[in-house]
Length: 136
Ligand code: HEM
Image (cartoon, rainbow, N blue to C red; front, side):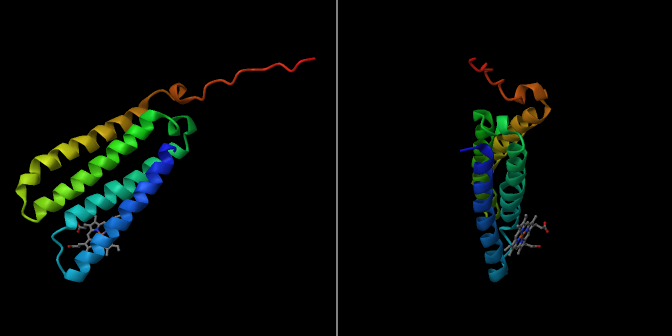
């Protein structure tokens, strides 16, 4: 699977969970989980979908293991951060260090993405295809 396909699929799953959380908050008139909802939607839906678009436009990067690692790290960090932020806002302050760790995972994934964006374009050029001369 390409990094872009994984990004798009996970982003859609995250926004379904995020919207369900939003509907739950609206129905119960209890907005305590609002920060978790906002993080899930903005990291899991908006950012991840944007990564997918970036990768899809760069086929050499899209098939690389590093891009896949970036998507996996980001998604893992998003899940853990969302759960930890929700726990903190429900009064379980013991989740603080977990949120801190998850924020560092997401940060590391963003640094990796920054590396993809800033590294010289020649690193992303497709490998030259072998030239075959037709037999006479
Ligand atoms: C079915 C869809 C959704 C529902 C029912 C919903 C519901 C809610 C509710 C009830 C709040 C709390 C508002 C407050 O306490 O002031 C909220 C906040 C928020 N939502 Fe959603 N939401 C939905 C989708 C989304 C999506 C798709 C995004 C992002 C792409 C998003 C981003 C946010 C943000 C950033 C906040 C915090 C706003 C603030 O700080 O005042 N939501 N949402």
